[in-house]
Image (tube, rainbow, N blue to C red; front, side, top):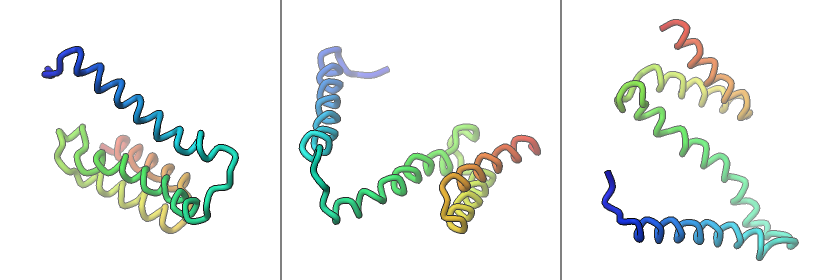
Amino acid sequence: MNTFDQTSLWIVIIGMALGSFALRFAFIGFMGGRKMPDWLMRHLRYTAVAILPALVTPLVVWPSPTGGETSLPHLAVAALTFAVGYLTRNVLWALLSGVCGFLLLFLLG
């Protein structure tokens, strides 16, 4: 299944854990009680806006139920979700519209 031996696998796991800890410590440990600069706060506001599409896009473009083939229903629900999010400027309404869109497709199909 994989070509890693036990030692290499544990080295990778420990390295990823140390890297993850270092990234978190950079903000929490060093910046703990200090006020962050305005330019950094401005950039951090866009984190959720960047992460949510990055998590969802592969599921829309290559959905598992179709074997990785792009499907029109997935694209239609993604377009609906985008439109609701753009018009309402509310993440919860956008997510709810996506869930309702897939629920409607499930009940009709």
